[in-house]
Length: 256
Image (tube, rainbow, N blue to C red; front, side, top):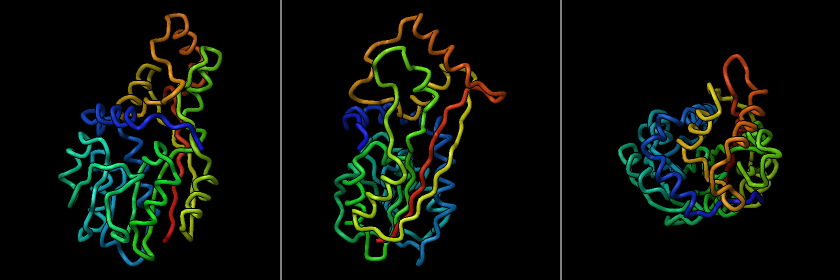
């Protein structure tokens, strides 16, 4: 299982990012739209839980698709939840690894780019518990090629971790099956976001709260020489569109 950062640190990162999140979350919107485009549950959802709702973009997507559905938004960053409140029927400040919900409460469990911060086994077990029989799951997460250019640019600079490690699609599928899901369907795609320079790229990552990598992370700033070496290493990836940040996106669908 990937080494995860401590929950309080992740919560703090996302809580701080609430004000900047919607402006920075271009990837989240693109992936959320794709996740929904490939999701055609039958019957249509009546009760939906948005697990790790952030500022509520997923709630808005789901509301536009199924106007009569009752949507419950869940996030452990209360500043995010405060923004999402206007787009949901109810809100829960909670960890999606331990939902304060009755068993078989929902017809659909949805999560967009959240479970990479979590213990997949615990999250999927909770999803299975709160879904009704026949209920459907749709999630997106990140695979191991995410930020590959960034990892390569930092190689040899120091011994610290600069990115999270992410699960292979097969690991996601196996965890869903182990949790009791059937009809597991996986799709993988690469999305490249481009930035004019490395500082802007890193600022965008920080703007969505995705800068907490947990144990092994650098606690101080890089020295000038080391920073220049990282910049020079990253420049080799530049294209006409700018410096790329690779996102290895995994979409998963399943039925209880």
